[in-house]
Structure formats: structure tokens, C-alpha cells
Image 1: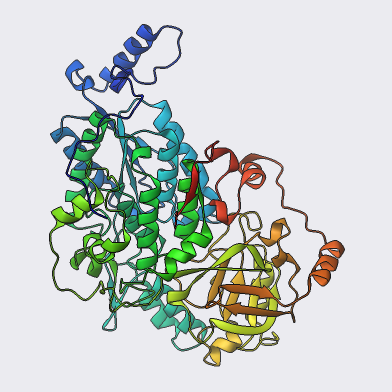
Image 2: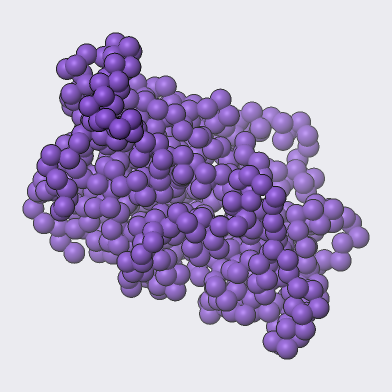
Length: 589
């Protein structure tokens, strides 16, 4: 697909040239617009602004800094650089705070709060006068929350990624969060290392502020944001504490003024072609399974349904090219040194929509031409020599998952991906915690572990508990992997033969709710099958004997969450936040 000649995108059709801009946008309702503007300017002048400054395009800066969010620990420096870029381009920067959600500091799980953050972002974009916004996010749920909110608000928006942390060193070995966190904790559980060593490595896994240094959810969403055209070129990969990250921030500020003047609204960037480019990238980087949920939610805000079967067809023809943990060996700083996303996108050119518009006003193809020919490196493989011959993610179906399930096949054990075994069932996380380390647990290495009630409503919030531990007695016997099935999620940094996102979830009466210990389950990634080998009549008897009662809450946000959250295939968004009309499905393959 060839790119057209560079053009400046015209204003969006139907946008009045004289529509209110800057400080005149979204005036507070006092019954007198003249007085509303007079009062607004009086208050903002109290902060020292002149009339000349207030006539410039207003660029909001969504500040997600928080003492509870070390992934965003470079926020002051980023805001300073963005502000500089906005001013250099003739805009007026205005910082404002929103909710900040960190993966390890959110109870019960960050996913429970993602939609709340998206609502905060959307309503602040609507309520406050701005011609465009710079969304600064990084930790797992922040970037999807911001893109969801911005998609609903409809403003011109540019995404700025906080950047990945630096790697550390443990006894001569390069380490980084959070694939190595899981690897060393697994070794500790198995008795392979002692408390002193696990404490030592704990000091090295996170060597600086920034997001996880492997292809976890944060890095995946950074790459996806660039593939969508929502960041400046090269915006995904620079580490958080580098000068390159600050230059990206400055350039982001400049571009935000440009999109404000052009009125280049987000719906002109987030098109079906952009979503398909993002899905290609997700599959080629061995990205986090969480990104499927997030992409479904972002697309849903614009009226697009995620077609999981089409995504799976796309996966069969999209190889994993990025040699990054957990599917490979390298870290994000190595990906950046190898040229970042431009290097990857060059290899994927035959599979991409090169005519997709980006936030710069140029197409993806044009940006790749501007990036140059690339250079020799060993982090991004060629299509002829992939890390994995198919995409990192496969979609499974069967009577156990009528609405689909997901497996990260590039990080799974090939010997276990074609399995039939006895189910060992845990009813919920409390049951799991009580029995998983019991030496009397009746479990063998060829069994299939099943964890119920960790889906969107069951937990609630669909926690990253899908990569639950190998039973201690098996770990001590040297077992490194076992098939695990749940309706929950797992961290993008995790690895193993783990089936996730079983839909419908058990808490709403999906077939998973009726699995019993001793049942036989068949997993075939090659055939994309996940089957419970129990006849339908028996399942119906079980359902009638033990009807599922959906979780409820008496008040507050939890009540809203449980009443309105959708299933994994619709992005675990709230039903009332999705676009009222459907425009079609993505991907269209």
C-alpha cells in the first residue's frame, strides 16, 4: 500500500471556522456568555496571564504524576519539556491533574479503575477550555484510559508516553521488571534461591523511574499508541530518564499546537486502518494480551466492535519479529537503540495501511520514508527469520469459551499447547490462596489448573491473576509450566501456557462456572480449540442445581462497576460509555 504525497489535512468536515476557540470554549453557564468570559479572564489573569497570552491556542496538559506512581516519576521533567514545545509553537500550555493509576498500588486491581480514569479524562477535556490536549501516561492502564476518554471527548489529542525504566544488574546478569520479577519469585518459591538473594535482586529489578523494561502492557500500549498514529514518530521507545524522551516531549508540545490549529480531531486518526495497524504491531511485538481488551475498549468508544476471529486470522499471517522479553531476550532500551518502532514498521510495511493518517498530519508511509533506511541490528528480526512464525496471540473457542479466550502462544510451552488433561479447579482467589501451596493438593504436572471468578465482575475488575503460581509441590519437583485456564488477565510481562479472558466469565454463568475437578479439558492451539469434555446435558444439570448469582454491591463506584461493566470481548468498558451507534468491526480481514 503506497502513501500519497504529503498534504496538510483540511479542517474536519462540518467544523465551523468561527467555532469558539481557546478561552472562549465551553463557557460556564451563568445565563450571560459575555459575563462568563469576563469572569473567566479575570480569574486566569490572577495567575499573571496577559491578554496576549490568552489569545493563543490553549493546549491542555493532562498531568498524571502521583507519589503512588513511580512509572510516572519523570512527570515534572516531561511537563517542562511539553510546555517548552507548546510555547515555541505559539500556544498557551495549561496543566491540569487527572486520576493516576499504578499497577502495583491499586486495590483490587488497576483494571477496576481504568474506566474511572477514562471518565475523569473525558469530562475534564469537555469541561475545561482547550483547543488540543497532550495526554501524558505510561503505566499499564493510564494510556488506554486516556485514549478512551479522548476518543469520547473528540478533541485533537496527542499521546506522550512516560517511557520505560532502565535495566539493573544482579550478579552480572541484566535484569528488569517485570518478567525477571516473576522469574526470580518463581525460583524463590521453588527453593532455588534464598531470602537473601531474592532481597538483593529486589533492589535491582527497577533501576529508575519509568514503566516496565520488557514488553509488558505499558510497553505494548506505547508501541500501539505510535502505531495508531497518536504519538510523534519515535515516541514509544526512549527510556524515561533519557534526553531522547525529553526531546520527544518537546516535539509533542509543538505538534499539539499544530493539531489545534488544524482542528485535527482524534476520530480522524483512530480509523479502522489505524486499529488494524495497531493490531499488526501487537502481534509482531509479542505484546501483552491486555492490549486486546484495551483496543476493544478504545475502538468501542468510536463505534467499532472487535472481531476476535478476524484478529486470529491476522495472527496467522503476522510473525513475531521483536526479540524482547517475555517472548525474546532483550529489553526496551535495546529496542530503542535498534531504532525503535521505525525499525519494526519497516519490516511490517507489506502488512500495514501506509495511508493511515498520523498526528503529524502526514501518513504512516510518509513518516517511514522520513525515518530513513535503518541500520543493521539484532533486536528486530526480519520476516524471513522471526522469533515466532505466527502472531504472539491466538484466539481460542469451544464450549468452554463460547465468546472466545486468549493465549499468548509466543510465550507458552510448545509441548503443552496441544494438551488434554484432568481439571483441578479453584473456585476463586481465596480458594487458590488456601490450597495452592498445600503439599496434600491432588495435582500432577499433566493436569490442567482452572481458576474461576476472576473475570470483570467476579473479582471484580478482572485482575492479573491468570498467571497464578504453579503448585509449590510441583515447583519444588522442577515443574516450570503447567496449563492454566481462567476468566482473568495476566501481566504482559508474564509467560507460560496460560489461557485467559474466558468469555462469558464464570460470575455471569459462563460454562467455566460449571467445571469440576476431575473433568477432562482439551486445549489445542493449532486448532484454536478450548473444550470441556462434558456433555451438554450434564452441564445443564449442573447449572440448574447450582444457579449462578451475579455479584452485587450496595452503593458507590463498585455498584456502578458491577451493573454496567462489559465482558472481555467488549473491552471491560462500561456499557454506557461505548458509542451509541456501531460503525462496523475491526479488524476488517
